[in-house]
Amino acid sequence: MVRVNAYAAPSATEPLVPTTIERRDVGATDVLIEIRYAGICHSDIHTVRGEWGPITYPQVVGHEIVGVVAEVGSEVTKHQVGDRVGVGCLVNSCRECENCRAGMEQYCLNGNVGTYASVDRDGTITQGGYSTHVVVDQDFVLRVPESIPFEKAAPLLCAGITTYSPLAHWKAGPGTRVAVVGMGGLGHMAVKIAHAMGATVTVLSQSLKKRDDGLALGADEYYATSDPDTFAALKNRFDLIVNTVSAPLDMDDYLRLLRLNGTLVIVGAPPEELPVHAFALSGQRRSFAGSGIGGIPETQEMLDFCAEHGIAPETELISADYINEAYERVLGSDVRYRFVIDIATLA
Ligand code: NAP
Ligand code: ZN
Ligand code: ZN
Image: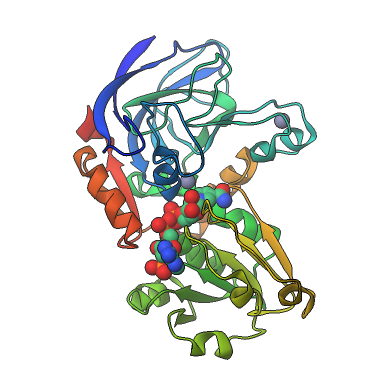
């Protein structure tokens, strides 16, 4: 066991504070990673504030992790000391169910082990990436291509894969019209990836404040949802809508923007229900769907896709003592477009 520096939430209502946590000894198939950068995902905030249900405190969050391999177990074959690696939202799964065997560990039928706030195989609660080191089984460690700047790579491990997976599944590409709802951490990655896939991309944001950025990142059109004309102008337009918003929206309004056979996929995860009326779906044989992160093979595919297309997240590098302010800015939709913690400031 090794004790390492970390930033933890002491309760649902208090700010995060510096602390230390224990990391397990490096087992035969484990990799010890010296964390360099960790992204701040809105899910971290939902989790520490207990919005998705009660958790055990103190809790360290962070599931957008990149670092360098510092030690490997005796049976590790996939990674070597010195490799640039990443860890996303998953650190284990049963590996035996049909979904795990298909490389979709996020949908493990026996319950995957999340990078934080999950019960690990040794019965402890997993602690995330706002810390200097983490020990992870080699099968859940990704290779980070050299061409992706290290200080920008971390958000790919959640925001990148969470948007890549539905865009790939629902076949965003040339000739398809994709709308991205919300220009935050996930949303800005959805814009970049959908554009790189060849789709025509429209951003639906609360205001036009981030319009110039959206167009520069690859959007073809940008609309404010606060303008009621938007919903009339875009009726029956899109093949695919990716909703990244962390708060509840009127789903019927957005479903009506889908053309025949279009799909509205939810990746945002507000704790509230999202009611839908039958006619908003049946009117144009529309689908209402959801998607969760991505499996390990698809996460590697996404990293390689981003390297090939020169895609990296837009980030703001912060020191660990800025995490609580960063949370407030995320909650105020004031992030351009992902906060990344420089873990050197935790050492
Ligand atoms: P984020 O950076 O805060 O972005 C969310 C964006 O939603 C904001 O930038 C804002 O965009 C828009 N928004 C926020 N509040 C709104 C409101 N009340 N009404 C309308 N629009 C609003 O968050 P994120 O890290 O991208 O995460 C987004 C959501 O995805 C969270 O709920 C998170 O838990 C969830 N998530 C899910 C998965 C999954 O596997 N499905 C994975 C990761 C995250 P504008 O300023 O452009 O309006
Ligand atoms: Zn996340
Ligand atoms: Zn499984």
